[in-house]
Length: 94
Image: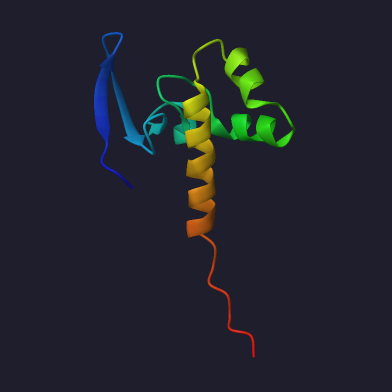
């Protein structure tokens, strides 16, 4: 995991582990599950909405400017990369 960063947000410390520019794991926010930075919006809900067929544009609009198109695309990359790096090795056939 990357190093913890602490920023001041609204006069309060905001400690988090960055998973990208927009996706973080913040202490005390949503049980440490990945969220979009400075929000309590978990990326899992966004992934579920995409999988259900909701468009990227509808998601951005639904979040009212709190989550950008770039942030959602980064979340997709984070999830995909994590999935691919945790796959077990296959046994050789033969």
